[in-house]
Image (cartoon, rainbow, N blue to C red):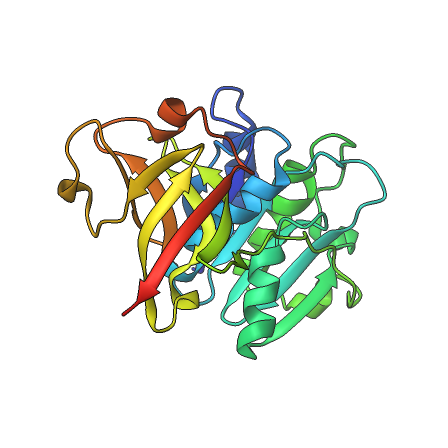
Length: 263
């Protein structure tokens, strides 16, 4: 059975995730389900997209991702399903799938998108407030059970895409911004390692603080701020054994100035 992976902003307190899994097993008994995260900040489509974009390529080919961060539930926004290279995604057409769509397009991978509007693959009664249970979970389960993408509904050629901020060149190096803060308080930026061709980071400034660039956390003293490439090859700022976001009073969108030098 194909792997299904869930990402939502539901948390785990209220049973919403559990009932989605029940629906999936009802359609695809014995399905293997992995929880990527249910701690996306409520209604924060951008953070859900960033989280998906960081992690989806580590899953096996043919994985079906059921993604629900859906402040527009019950409105005219479409439910969509997409084939992005070897991966499949189901979710609201609100920009949540932006990184995967752009990844497939940029790499020349297979990219097919349909509106998941065929009621045959929904629950018989669809609530106006819980499409995660009534549309996205059963559609994902049907895909995992072998239903072809094209059976779900008509082709979509104009998906909603988020406007992701890009790091910008400066005379000294780069101007980046914080795009994600994890539970440890690490600040991930939008400067990707591959952008630095023939140069390396020498120093970083955030909130008026000069921060040294290192290769590992252990190169900094406990309680000191360091900048380094994180596991997704994004430039990040950390406080060794502490919380950089709290120490710097930093938030998503804050500017990061990056000084570089030739290799």
